[in-house]
Structures are given as C-alpha cells and as structure tokens.
Length: 178
Image 1 (cartoon, one colour):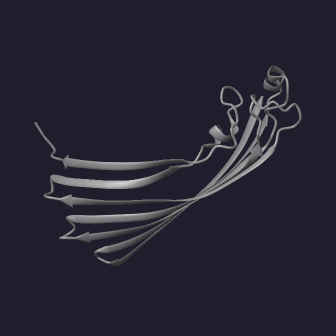
Image 2: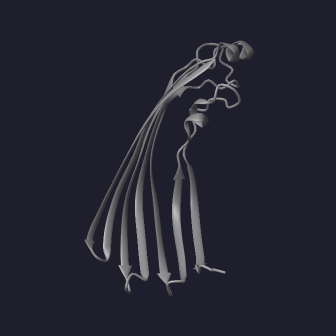
Image 3: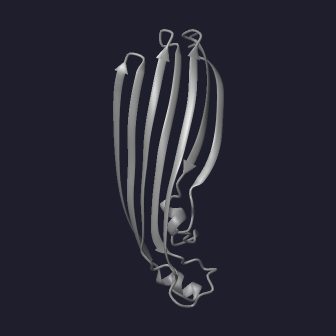
C-alpha cells in the first residue's frame, strides 16, 4: 500500500504602521494538497475498491487585523476579520456506502467568515489583564478528508468546524531569583 501526498503551502504577511498607535496587518495562508492512494490490501479486505481514488484540497485563509495602542502602549485593542475558503475534490469512498459501483464524485466548496476582538491593559511591567472573543473556524485536515489508508476512512464531505471562544486572563510575570 502507498499513500502519495503532495502538499504545497505559502504564507504572506504584510504589516503597515499608520501611526505609532495604529497598525494594519494582512496575512494570507494558502495550501494545495493532492492525495493519490493505492491500497490493494485494503480493497481486498473491503471487498471493493474504496481506497484507490485521488483527491485534492485547496484552501486559503486571509486575515486583516487592526491594532490600536493607547496610554503609552499600556492599552491595546485588536480586531480581525478572516475569510476561509476551502475546496475539496474527491470521492465518497466510505465503507458504509452501499453502492457496488464506483463511488460518487464529490466537490465541496466552503466560504466562511471568522472574526475576533480583544484587549490588553498593562497595569505595570509585572501585571496585566486581557480578554478576547473569537468566532473560530477549523478546516478539516488532509487525513480527515482522505483517510490514512489504515485506520481512518476517507470522509471528503466534512465541513469546517465552528467555535465561539472567550478568553480572559490576569498575568503576573515576575522573575524570581534565588
């Protein structure tokens, strides 16, 4: 059995400071992956060809962040907007698919928006308080989409996961020496 995968990634990060207090950041993270499995042993065990189908995934996450600093850099506000694009091309090769013929070809395209906002306030060099909120998005991994040829069955119809994340914190940071 072989499970050939080609994975290409690129990242671009541009940072622009308008004034000492305002910074704009553009970040783009792209991925193209191609999976070409060959598993005659798995097919024999399943009683049909469920593993020898190619698949591709293309995704891109573009984010724009604005940071604002005030009160001698003691107060920081940050807001961000992210666009998630995910395209998966593959086949429904689940072992639970009752079709005895070749599996259905699938194409799944997702475009969603994520966002976050947060602040931090430094009371001193040693003590700060912070809080943030995020509508998070997690895109499926290659292994989740196309399986691993051993234990994980391909599931090309997976959609992104969504979460509402709230974070708060108090930080006291003092180096103690003996």
